[in-house]
Length: 112
Ligand SMILES: Nc1ncnc2c1ncn2[C@@H]1O[C@H](COP(=O)(O)OP(=O)(O)O)[C@@H](O)[C@H]1O
Ligand SMILES: [Mg+2]
Image (tube, rainbow, N blue to C red; front, top):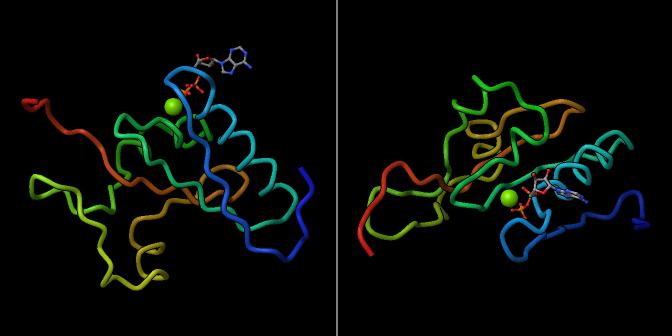
């Protein structure tokens, strides 16, 4: 992949479970960060493990706070939050200076 150095790029990795999405996302994130890019790696899987795959220590993985509002039956994107505040409050710096963020996490099993 060749990216113009100053370009802001969003890369999404999706696909069936177990095909290697998280592995590719983690390698891509750290590789781009090592090239000097600012990388925000956002895990949107409800069973998240991107932060661990990026090499964040276990205690910091556990401390990652989902930024979606999960208090109701639906997950709500907090549109009123300033993006820089969101990054500062809920982002964690990992190896190679990748900033890890977590969208949601299943805390307990429900019905349906
Ligand atoms: N290119 C690959 N070759 C062999 N095993 C791989 C490869 N990419 C990922 N894996 C392994 O496959 C499993 C699933 O990968 P993962 O990235 O967690 O998939 P996903 O995020 O799509 O569910 C992991 O154990 C991972 O180490
Ligand atoms: Mg995965």
